Length: 316
Figure 1: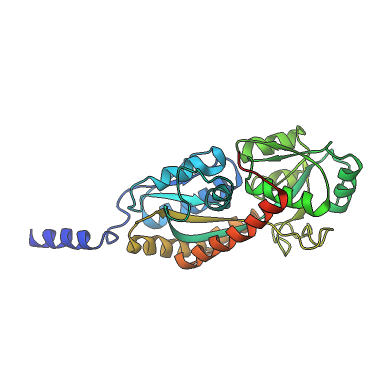
Figure 2: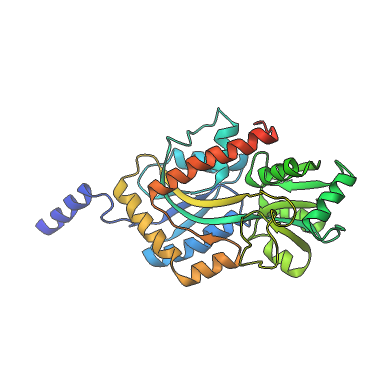
């Protein structure tokens, strides 16, 4: 009995001592099937194995990530509800909307960066272009005739294309969708001409030949598509646009719990199988400390703020 009392006292003093002792809900703020969802599921499988507790993926798509982020912001800060954080939820929405139901800098506790994923510029295989330079020439020859998909106003792939349009002085029509899955489906079907998107949902269609990959937004070529040039080397010097994935918890989550999650995430990202699966989808595993993630997000606020201002994008 004394031992049991002592154990209970220890758990009360250290809320992370028994963590996790039940399933963990990982909120993915986009629909199933998109690039964010693919990366989240790759990591959650290994977390489940490592902890012996189920990591439940809860897709809460809508409003460019606002619905999912707000769910986590208002959850109990005990480490059992986490957000699969993206630039949309944590940076872009706050830049575009001053009336969000959550405060991106105050309502979340950064845990760890997970991966970097360059945006891939892909076009339908019926498009009579095979390079970035040919696309630019084709778009300039018929301004406003081409349309491009995104997963919503102000989302990373929308900003990636707006930056491309700005730097190339081209005009194309924006067609926003409610998620990557329907956007990619319409791109493959030819309902839209092109789009920027993280690699995972585009890769199978590029490999099958239904889509043509013209360039990646990173400063270096992706190991997943080594023959595809960067946008910068393909004809738009200085172009760079890379998205990222992270884990954040509700604010006031105990630091001991955050450190425990961070440590386990770093171990999972170091597993060769996980690294290989992510890299095969074009994502680069990248763990961090909570402090490093905080600085990373702050830097992205500055970078994406400049893109939004240069493109003249306004919040809805």
